Image 1 (cartoon, one colour):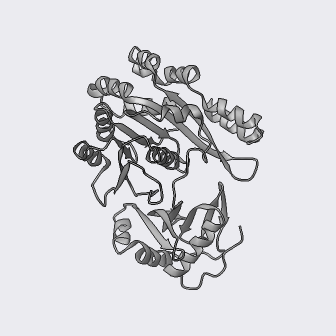
Image 2 (spheres, rainbow, N blue to C red):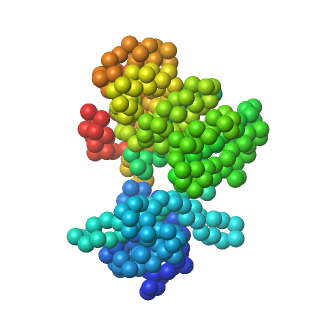
Image 3 (cartoon, rainbow, N blue to C red):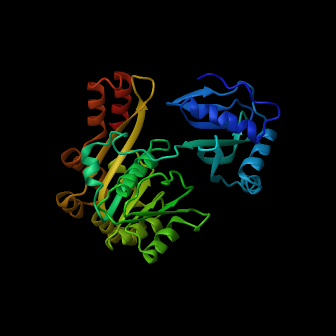
Length: 368
C-alpha cells in the first residue's frame, strides 16, 4: 500500500478523514490508531503503515473528542470502551461508514489509547458474491428458528448475516418485517430492492439499552425476522429461544471457533439448575450453525473457510438423548455426518489452489 504522507501537524478530523479514504481505496478493512505508534491499516490480513510518524497520546485524545464526541474521553477515563459508528462524506453521492472501538491500554509500558475504525461497505454483499455454499443458503431460507454465524473478531460474521438479510429482502415472493438490533448498526439497506418486505434497524444502546431488551420488545412489534448482533449472555440467549419458538426467525452471532464449541458455550452459560431446560430450548430452536474463518489466499487477499451443521430431526434426536457434558464430541461427529467440518472445506480450497499448504496445515492444527 502506498503510504499516505499528507497528514499535517497537528492531526485533525479533516486530515484523518482523508487518511481513512486513502486506506479504504487501498482495500483496508481496519485502520488502527495507537498512542506512540504510526497509523496502521489492515489490508487483506496484513498490517501496513499508513503514515510513518508516531501519533502522540494528546493527539489521539483530541481526535477522540473531535470525531466521537465529548462523551468518549470521560467513558475511557472510567475504564470503559467506546463502541460507536462514524461516517464521512467522500463526495456528494457517497458516504463511507465505519464501526469504531476506542479504549485505554498499555503501550510500551505507558498508559495510552487505541482506536480502531472498521470499514463497513455501503451496500451489503449478495450471497452469490460471497460464494456461500448452496447447502448453507438452502438451510438459511427457513421461516422460523435460530441461525447462528460464529467465528472470531474480523471473520466476516456480520457480512454473511447481512447477505442473508439482503437475500430475504430481495425475494419478491416474501412478505417480511425484519428488525435488527446492532451495536453499532453496520450495514444499511437503503439501496436494496425490498419488494413487499420492510426492515428497521435499532442501535444498542442508542435506541434500546441492551440486546435482551431488543428481543423482548420485538415480541411486541411483530417482526417476522430479527437480527441480534451477539448472543453473549443467558438473558439474550433465552429471549432468542422464546422468539424462535413462537414462529419467528432469529439470526445472531457468537464468538466461537467451531460448531461444537458454539453449542457447548451457549449451554454452559446457564446455571446448573436452568441448564437442562435451556439446553432443550436451544436444540429445539436451532436450524443452522455456521462457523467461518478468513484466511490468506494464494492471490494476496483472503478467502472464507466455513463449517456448518443443519439441525434436522436426526440431529435433534441425537442431542436430546445425549449427555450435555459430552456435547462437543457428539456435535463434532454430527458435523461430519450431516454437515461439513472446517478441515473438509479447507481441503477443497487447497485442492482448488485457493490456499497454500502452509495455510492448510495451520487450519488442520487448530481444527485438531
